[in-house]
Image (tube, rainbow, N blue to C red; front, side, top):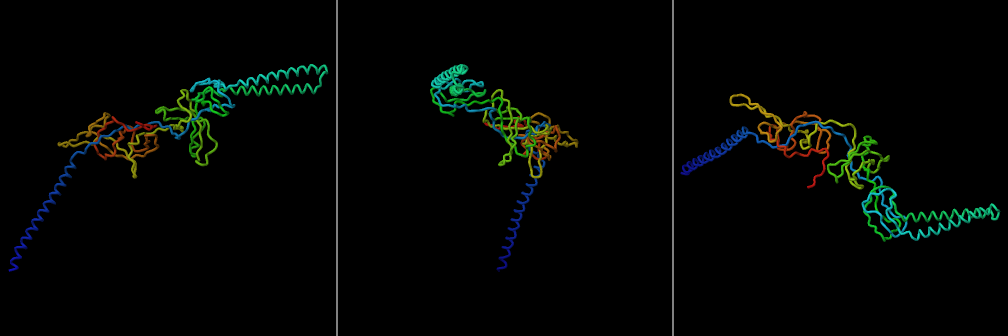
Amino acid sequence: MDNAKKKPLTKRMIIMLIAVGVVLGGIVGFNLFKGYMMKKYMGSAPMPSATVTAMKADYQMWQPALNAVGTLRAVRGVDVTVEVAGLVRSIQFRSGDEVRAGQVLAQLNADSDVAQLHSLEAAAELSQTVYERDKAQLEAEAVSKAQVDADAADVKSKKALVAQQAALVDKKTIRAPFAGKLGITAVNPGQYLNPGDKLVTLQTIDPVYIDFFVPQQQLPQVALGQKVTVNADAYKGQSFEGKVNAINPRIDPATRNVQIEATIPNPKKLLLPGMFASVAVGAGEEQRYLTLPQTAITYNPYGDTVFIAKPAPPKETKGGEQKEAKGPGEKDGKPASDIVAQQVFVTTGPRRGDQVAILKGIEPGATVVTSGTVKLKNGTPLVIDNRVQPANSPNPTPQEK
């Protein structure tokens, strides 16, 4: 009886397992078929195009340069100070004036000093008169030779006192020690100044010096008279040229750098002492390099690469004939089907600002993708849109907006 009951139960279990197997097999088969069809569709579907910028690789002349940073310094610069104490009677300049050497800048009160000078001058004149009289009497042997010698010494002493007092009076007149441009003064008439107090700053700023340092290993590349190009942050896009006029004969033992001094003509007086500036010292002859923006280079551990825009390969039509693809052309927005990307290895050389020299790997005139390379691979259709170009300046400057 028990065996008769078990047989139908076993039969039902077998049927249920077969049904479950059929269902699972159907699901797996459907998924495999769906994957195959999707793969087949993706393989036959056209590759989506990528919008990039591009330019033709061409040669440029590069001037090898040693780059440094420096500080501008006046050829002559000094804070004009008073040598003797006194009350300011008058200020004879305005802040920012151009002055010549010896021009009077200020006058201190010298009334008592002038009076003392007149007194000493009178005493010197009297001493001279006594000396002349005693000289005449010496010829008549009315006085001794010793008296005449004493009179001569007294005359010299009195004249020395006059010269000393005249120098003191002259110090009450403050003059420009050299020609240049005055700074801003805070001294006013009636103000009392002590010895050493600043009256105004005076700077000669045409030309100006720039002091900078280069490593000792670069010293053989620097020589007197070498061309120097200076760029100051205050005047973006404007360069100032000068020449090396001095090389310090001593290397700084702490940094192993050598100080260089260059002279920069400054007729418009745009460059001011104390300014920070970048310096490029021309070193050697100009070099001719095939140049690209650095954004065009993809740097990899196994080598540097660029993408070249090339005509798409010919396509076969239904009749077996080949349809010739068009070239990359020059206009922006070229149809994607006509241009594709091809990755090539390159050997890079020196860098200059946003640019990099290409020593090997591409030929002049090749159309190279300059931005948008991240989304590319071999055969990717391209749309070239050059409305916004990547930075490609040999002397880039920070952009503040």
